[in-house]
Image 1 (cartoon, helix red, strand yellow):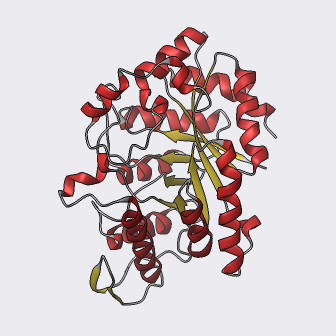
Image 2 (image 1 turned 30 degrees about the vertical axis):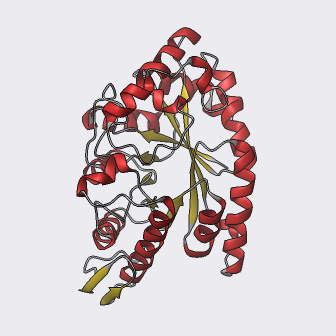
Image 3 (image 1 turned 135 degrees about the vertical axis):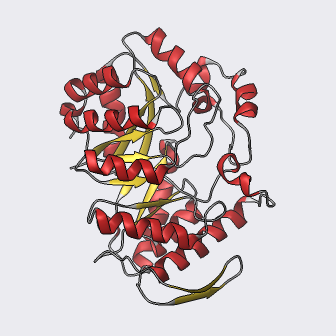
Length: 326
């Protein structure tokens, strides 16, 4: 049975409002919350960027499902030891509910530490070295580390859960997917085209099997952006106004400013969303789209409706979309 969760967009909404949306989504039949770790929104129009760890702990008090950062970067703004401490604390307070979603980072959020922003291969290598440190710390023992990118003096996590949280990595790249299968507990894909998903899954499963793990027991998670509104015109207007980054068909990891994204958004046209994000007023069309990803093998799908109409959307999807999924 696939779980359909709520993607809480801290880039778009005040955290107090989002906490209410999460509670109402759970009451409507959504299962679990994925929360974005941003220090800036994609475009100024989105207007928010609250601290994900404060938000998750409050949401966990208001809901009963699983919760995790989808995703946080352990490589630049935050030393991996701090991410490990935060994750261990969340798991100690909410056992069995918290998962740690990690990514290799985007300049939009990570450039603030003002170092050189490395190429993608180095960013991925940094992430896997960070995961090595986090795994060592999850042992609860004293740990030292001296690697290619990080040094850590003797450190231990004093507040430890009985079981460490699972580590999931966000990627749409086959090489990273294979390493994720080998070293981590599950994979997150953020809206990859479906022809790429098969390759990503194959490599993920290959890495898992090589490490002696059963890939069928390892979560495959998707964050799915969509635009629903009572009319197609309003749904398209919401996409263009609130989430133009969804129509940008180029890598975004090197862009540092929401104001640069705002300039790029001026060239986004309705046709640019085709194949990247479903924009429709028809709940049945959305049910078919979500079902397609479940059929591809995702067992957890977190939905993000890009418009401001969150409560109306939660209500409609709770009644007319979630019951149709199998």
